[in-house]
Length: 261
Image (cartoon, rainbow, N blue to C red; front, side):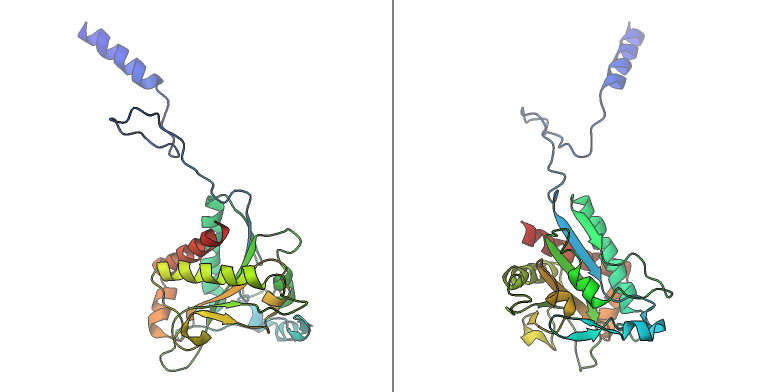
């Protein structure tokens, strides 16, 4: 009898459905049934992530120095970016962080578009006018341009977020939501233990600039974030570590979620 009962119990257990990871398991003392968790809070949202520069820009001086529209004036197509004193390039840092951001946002249900799809010595661009218009034709909810600074000022460290001014006809339509996006990104980075810049942006971490094509040519809320100063030895240690880059990505995703609600 005991053997038959054990066999019957094994059959019943084997027939039970597996518990999905996205279903909350109710407490044994709670008579209410388990309810599915909200697994895609950013479903239907479209985010453009712009990893600044390209690793091979320095190999194409004529192409990256070509003047392109920048919002009422022209600027060089692109620049080489900066690096840590140890030679870790800005292009690589922001590429690695941006990919982490994209992965996390997609996991939350968002559609993510990157402005470049490689980090290679034999590639250049895209130009700042292309970056500036990225997201316009697809009605993106926001664009986040990811960079790092290279200041030699004594003690220079910390992040700052750059947002466009009220400048007709270029950014008059997006400056208010862009300022709100800047505040959200600042809050997300502060929540993940990053400090505001000590050397620029008035000490509050938010700067307003009218000279950046990436902002001027956008028709969607847009900010450029300088995640820190690569010439700071302390910040370089964070930027060159996988754990540090993951923390930057979490801060940026937190800022995006704050803005999108």
